[in-house]
View 1 (cartoon, helix red, strand yellow):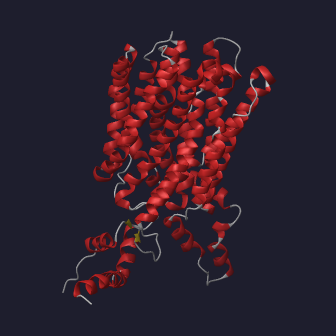
View 2: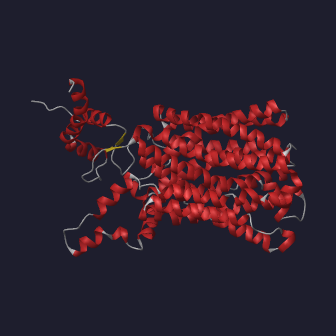
View 3: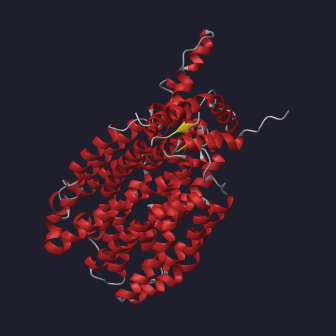
Length: 512
């Protein structure tokens, strides 16, 4: 046999032997980085497994936000179907109020699904949220109009919006935690950006279908029956998303956390009971109490970050079509078409932003986005106010450039704020409190403020600037987490060579 072939075949065995020789160093490094860890190794990820997990989580997230985005893009039509009485402004406010209702229960969903995900695992909870979202969205498409059943029509709409909101409470925290715990430390920003890519795909799909139906069928058909079609699509899409999620394995970080707490106890009965106390039925409630008692400073920081981020996000991706149509009197199809172009542009660059925050840090990218909104909101809305295709596109481009700095970074920055044992619960609670108070109410608040100030078209810019100022302060207060292990988890690397390099860098040479 040729010598080259023998050496090639021998190389993998040599790598394995090298790793065995350095295993004690792996443990020493892991304990040094996080003293609370017990007998754990550096995690060497399998790139194929990581990519499969990221794709499944991102696609499932896309389907969730497709379901959720449909409502915002059909807000004007829904106002006419379910709230026909009064002026156009009253119908639109009623529609946005129902939109905001789903956000009122999101903290409850986060408080339920988050600790449950820390108790039974990320995978099972993400499958459950997918089922609930698909069911709630599908049922909205079946509700008779106000003209048919009167008061019961908006009542049923609110009920199914509550189901949507409750399920969404466990979605972002779980999906971002899932990807963060699978990704290697030096690529967490890159892989995390695909979660928001999934969000944009969901919103783009929803806006595209609404635009297609409006263009082909016209306003009369949309107000009569065609508005139901996007909601009914949620049924089969939900089954696809469920299939993708149930095929996933649990995250390595959670598996190691579970293994460290469920090994056989050799001590007394009291010690054994303590060993398995995290498996009791009351564990999620205890976890919830632990989150508020121990994590409250980080929760406040998370709420400030997410509040600023979501106001800018919902302003651009949810409210802007209505702003262009209802305030600037654009054709509904034109507003959606411009938004579609903006979202496609964001999708093209978001993974590059993920790579940038891996290289330069989360804080510089987040600060750039927040400062961009604070400084460019007024110029952007002045451009949009001009009303021509060119100026509207330029204004949207300025806002989109600021937003993509946040979109491509937040999904990696937020999970790193909390330790593994309470990460899903803490992030779900903090994220959904912020979204409930600030994000989901953005269209309603802006519409009400504009009505109160005589339809001042610059109100959205001022509201965005206020949110961005809070975001600047929050980013200044957060710690840099790029290329660092998650709190409560061992270092995670992409290759064996990187593991050996990490060991070499952190192990002092013996002196004689």
